[in-house]
Image 1 (tube, rainbow, N blue to C red):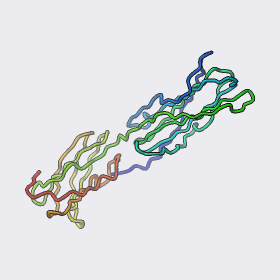
Image 2: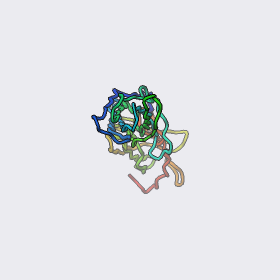
Image 3: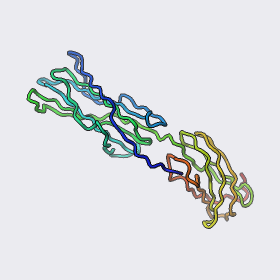
Image 4: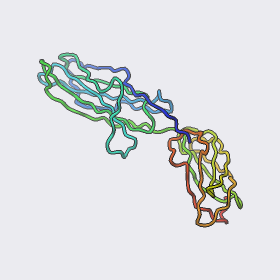
Length: 248
């Protein structure tokens, strides 16, 4: 498989401060207003919104958004992401009843989870901080939508040949590739694998050295590394030598 070297630029798009109507006091909170996914980077974005009410004696309010990301749902501690136009304080007009601010972060990377940490400050007439608070939004999950080839099974097609079944478990089509067998480390046999749509599987017959019971057959998917896949660590698979009477 081929892993493209890609540096994804994350940036905050147009920010829209929305002042609460006269006399209206929004609740203190941080929300994930939108989370859009897609195969193209321009389709992947998240919209985060923070809101805060004015306190007694408040002259102005300010709000700051920090972006955090993690690589798996189980990851304990998300890492801060540097993004232009984020991590700066946005100030309200003077004397308003509440302050609502929205940040749109675009070109999110696939296979990651994103959230915003929103910080709030209330300032009196002298600009001093009356109070501060922090809220965290839910995560926006960006699934990895690239193709991914996986080995389903290895059987004997005939003496000295193997029936290899492969499936594309990814979310986008996989182009034509090659599968290689290594029954013995010093020898290798290859066979073309046709293009596979998402969820599609195929079986190909690959000639190779006969294996013996108790040994393994090494299968190398995408041997020539032409596919940009969501996973690169599952291409080399060791499969038990199939019994001679198990024909595909």
